Amino acid sequence: MPPLVIWKAGLDGFVTDEHVAHYARSAGPGLCIVEATAVSPEGRLAATQIGAWSDEHTDGLARLAATIHDSGAVAGIQIHHAGGRTNAQKNGGLPILVPSHTEKTPDSAVVLSGLQIEKIIEDFGVAARRCIAAGFDVIEIHGAHGYLGSQFLSPSTNKRTDEWGGDIDNRVRFLTECVRTVREEARAAERPVIVAVRLGVLDGGTPPLTQDDGCAAAIRLAEAGVELFDISHAGSLPDVESAVPWSQTLELARATKSCLDVPVIGVGGIKTPAQAEEALDAEIADMIAVGRAILADQAWAAKTIAGTPEQIALCIDCKPRCFHFTDPEKCPPRRAARSRDA
Ligand SMILES: Cc1cc2nc3c(=O)[nH]c(=O)nc-3n(C[C@H](O)[C@H](O)[C@H](O)COP(=O)(O)O)c2cc1C
Image (tube, rainbow, N blue to C red; front, top):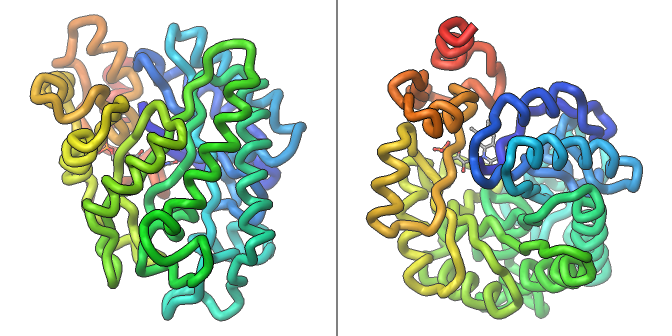
């Protein structure tokens, strides 16, 4: 199960009973990666996003890790900073921090100084420490979907001329430094903790992040110690329309896997267990994540394991946007699954 925000935290980023119930109901995947979790309050993508910016968040995060472990799964969590993809309503009026100004960033956005960049990297490390203390086995750094990691990677949003911008080695530096600091925390743990990156390898920006750049970034990140890649698109600030559609992100995993020796998770458009199996057989990726289809029918994995895939209420790719971004109870298969399984 890939990270999927459900917008249920209070304004202070604390895990709620609704989160715990949601992850318990979704039980069945072998690895469950908890939704994007903010490393600092100004980096929130939504006011109702979970946070790991305070020691006080650790107990709630531990409830989630325990819930996932109780289902027999490995517990992962995605740590995240939105960079310029936020606004005053979402981040409580704190500064909006960006690698560079572009024609799409708000005038009020603050271009990050070297010191501020280092502070955010440190925030990733401290957030990882809290998540490890909470019991998580996989720490996934968000480097996709137009958020801060992608903003550094993409030439359309990174116009810097210092060591954080320019060629791909410089543009990936923010993520490799996050990996180094998270890896130190993982190494200090008394049990194995895997460092993962959700890497956006392609976007439709001007100029675009190309798949060649994406592969070069992945290779640098593997050298920095990434042990698991979760491949997706890189979006583009702030018009997500220029992102690659989810139906095509699985192919990005195939292309990136071909340049790496590190396990790769592929995601995008998988609706049925048979499709997931086919993707594995075709060696598109080493692991397959199933996102909206699990939101549509939270017993997706349980029904697959039970050998009753015909009972899954299938995700129907709602257009223009998946209801789980705004109003999950309107998701047609979720309604069908709830009444059928009641
Ligand atoms: C409601 C919703 C919330 C999402 N939240 C996250 C998130 O927190 N972090 C992330 O990296 N991707 C997020 N995604 C993207 C999914 O993890 C996944 O990559 C995408 O839905 C494509 O996979 P699918 O076709 O199986 O749904 C979200 C997608 C949806 C629909």
